Length: 112
Image 1 (cartoon, rainbow, N blue to C red):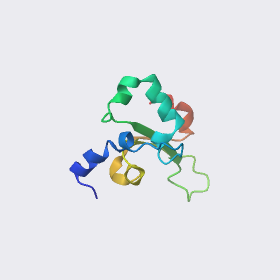
Image 2: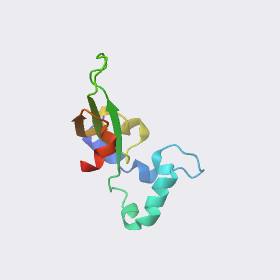
Image 3: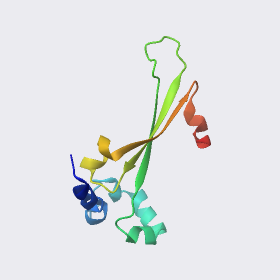
Image 4: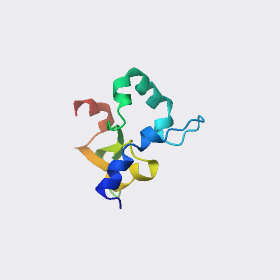
């Protein structure tokens, strides 16, 4: 587990460790990240600005029931400033929304 001081230091990892040889090692090496930096240069100039990724995943909590139509949708925020070894671990992933419902929730997620 990292201390808060170590985590603070690692929050600038994406700024200091970008790949220069066109090898995708982290999301900060991707074309979408570079495009965002070009469109918003003031945000990109500050290495401490927090970049978040949203992940969603739906599941059926009653998988054993034969005709259960109930489902849940999780929305998780992840800190992409951190190195990959940290940003995909529980302490740095935040459950921002849990949407319960009887139907496919991805179709109406814009309501949340």
